[in-house]
Amino acid sequence: MEGRYRVQQNDLLLHEAVIKNETAAVREALQRQPDVNCRNNYGRAPIHWAASRGNVEIINLLIDAKCDIEAVDKFGMRPLLMAAWHGHLDAVKTLVQAGACLAATNKKHNDLLQCACVRGAVDVAAYALSLGARVQGSDAAGDAPLALAARAGHTAVVEMLLENGADIDAVNKNGRTALHVACEGDHCAAAALLVSRGAAREARDRAGRTPLHVAAAHRHTDLVRALLDAHCTVDATDNNGVTALQMACAQGCRGIVEHLLEYGADVHLQNNVGSSALHAACAADAADIVELLLAHGADPALTDKWSQSPVSVAGGAGGAAESPPEGFRRAARGSFSAILDLITATANVDIHQVRKAMKGDGRPQLFSIVLRNAASLQTLVWLYHRLVNNTNKSHNFTTLN
Image (cartoon, rainbow, N blue to C red):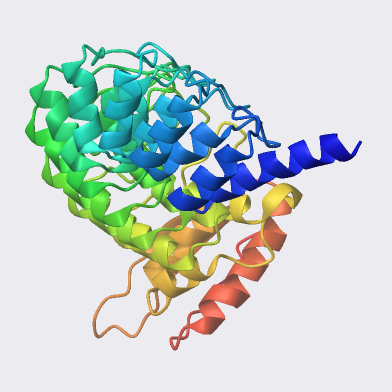
C-alpha cells in the first residue's frame, strides 16, 4: 500500500511540474520513475500539458522518457492538436519530428489545420498546409478551416486560407458559408474581407437566411450597416417569409431598423403567417420602433392569418390590448387623421368622412362610424378616450343610429 501511494505521489509531482512549466522540477520528477503516461480526470497525460504550454525542452524530456505522443484525452485531443490549439509552432514541429500522426482529429473531427484556424494561429496553420493539410477538410459540423477562422474573427487566417485556395462559399451542415458565420460573431473585418474577395452576399442557409438576416437576428448594428453598404438585398426573405426588418423589430433593435429603413426596407411586407414589421414591433413592446414604422408609412390595418392587427398582437393571447402601444399613441398625438386611421385599423369599424371642414364656414368635420360587430364598440370607446383625449384638440363624435 505504501509503495502504491509513493507511485501515485510521484505521478502527481510530474503532472504538477509540467503544469507549472518548471523544467528542473520535471527532470527531478522523472528521476523518481513515475508513470510518464499517468492521466488526470480529463484523461490528460503530462505530454498534453507540455504541448499546451509549448515548452519544447519539457516535451523532449517526456519523449526521451518514452511517453505516448499519441495519448488521447476525453475530448479526443492529442499532444499535437493541443500544441496547435494553443498556437505553439515549435512544439508542433517537435511533435511532428517525433512522429506524431498528422491525420489525427479530436472528437469534433478537428485536425491540425482546423485547430490552428479556430485559435487564429497563422504560423501553425501555414505549417500545417505545408505538410499537406486539406484546406477544404471539414469537422463534424461541416465547417471548413475558412469557416472556423471566420467564426472566430481571425482575419489574418481567413486571408491566408483564401490565398491557399479555400472555397469562399463552402457551406456547413446548416448551409452556412464563412460569411454567414462571420456575421454570427459580429466580425466586421472578416466579413468585409470575405465580401471584398467575392463571397456570395445573398447565400442562403438551410433556413433561407442571408448574412444580412444573421447579422440582424444577432443585433449586430454596425455589421448590418456594412452589409447594406455592400449592396445586400434589404428585403430578402427566409423560408418563413421573414425579412431582416421584421427580425430587427422583433429584437427591439432600433439602430438596425433605422439602417434598414434608410436603405428602403419595405414596411408593408408580411411573412408566411401574415405578420408585418409592425406586428413584430408591437409584440416586442418596442414603442420607439412602432412610432418609427408608422412614420415610414406602416399600415396598422394589416392583419395576419389569424386576423390580428398589430394592436391585437400587443395585447397577447388575451386579445386586444388594454391600451394601444405607446408608439401608436405618440404617432397619433396631435393628428386627428392619424387617430382615425388607428381606430379604423384596430377597432373593427368603418369610418367615412361625411363633411370636410371648410375654412371660414365654422362647421366641423363630420364622420360616419359603422360598427362591424358589437365587440367593436368597446374597442372604439377605449381608443377614443385614450387617443383623442390625449390630444390638445377638441373633436365631436355624433352617433348615427
